[in-house]
Every structure is written in C-alpha cells, then in structure tokens.
Image (cartoon, rainbow, N blue to C red; front, side):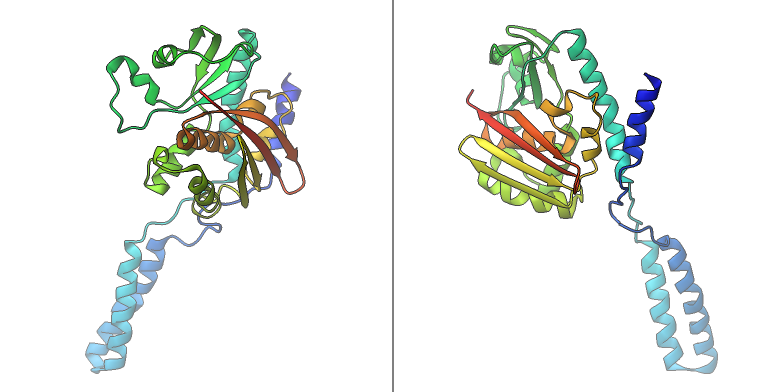
Length: 282
C-alpha cells in the first residue's frame, strides 16, 4: 500500500511544473524601489550643489519611479503540481465514502437557485451548489429532500457532496463580476475559455461546444491532468477534476438543468482531457 501511494506521489511530482502569475519569479519591488531612490536622491543633491537642470530631471525621475515601486505589490505564484496535490485527498476521501456505503450510481450536478431569488427558510438549501451521487440509477431526489442540506438521502438512496470545483466556480464568478445564473449557455461557452486560459491561467487551451443536450469539453495543459493519472481514483471520472467540476457547476447554473458527466477521455500527449456532459431535465 505504501509503495502504491509513493508511486502516486511520484506521478504527481513528475508532472511538468508551470508557474501561474507571474510565470517567472522577479526581483521584489521594494528592492527595485530602493535601487532607484538612492541614486535619485544623490542626483538631486548633486544637482542642487552644481545647479544642474539635467541632473535634477534625472534625480526626480529616478525618485518618482522608486517611490512608485514601493506601492507595487509583487504577484504571487504557485507551482501547478501543488494544485493537483492539494485536491488529491478530497478524491481519496470521496472514493472511501462511496466504497463503504456501496454507492455506485451516477453523479448529478444540481442547479442552485439564483442568489437574489427569495426562498422560504426551509428551502434555503436550494441555493447551494451540490452533487447528488445515487446508489443506483433510480432517479433524482425531490426538491424537499435537497433543501434539507443533508449528506445521506434515503429517497432515492445516495449522498450529497460539495462539488470539487466549487472554489474554482466562485473564483470564476469573481472574475466575471456576474452571477452565472444570469448568463445564457451560448454566452457562457464564449467567455469561459479566455477566462480560464488568460485570466486564471489554469490551462493552455479550453474548448466547449454543445450539440443538443450533450456538451463537449476539451482541456489541454491543465495542472489537474495529473489527477487522472492516479489509477486508484474512481470519483475523478464521474465528478471530473476541479476544473471540469467547476465548468459542470457553471453549466448547471446557467442552464437551470441537472448536469451529469457521461464519460471522459485522457490523452497523455499534450496533457489533454476530454469530458462529455449530459443535460438532464428536472
């Protein structure tokens, strides 16, 4: 068991490490500020002594930029392999729960109600993004059951868990500065790829397209690809990696329909993940 776990850790560590914002570690801004202010101050002092307009202009410029650098906060960066490593324990825990409870059905991403919609106190749980994992293929729980915010459900049997991509979903909405429930699906599919690749830099390429009730997602160069390389994980294939999960949540919110992960395909070349979602009528 220890040898297998060590092998999994080695798989994650061997994944190519990318840097997120900025891509290269730079010199701290405070050091740059000091390096500019000192010669700037000396140039100003020498300009006063020599009555030199040129030195005064140079000194003022250097001092100005030096002070400016003190107000620039350095960007933080994270090794991409750490993103996959921190998510690994969540999937192992989910696998253990499902195995102990003998749950082997489908996972359903439940669309939450918009935040600005009034709901009675006993239905407040419907505003949460959850995934229902059924113990069989016997269907969906009622609204009343979902509103109770319970972990174990009895009719039908299954569990309700938080989506592994919930944190990323919240970050996407922060970047958008909009509630995704107010966005149409076709618009969502246009704005998500650049948001993920350029703003958050969580993948090199993202492609999303819809055909009837099926939605196709292709992610290339994501750090979460390493999770699919862990053979022991089962829940990754019906919940999706954190990025695929966040996109499933976004689709559910925008469409108002339940979303399931039908299948996935992993291509080591280019670290590509393909996911097929299915929209399910409530």
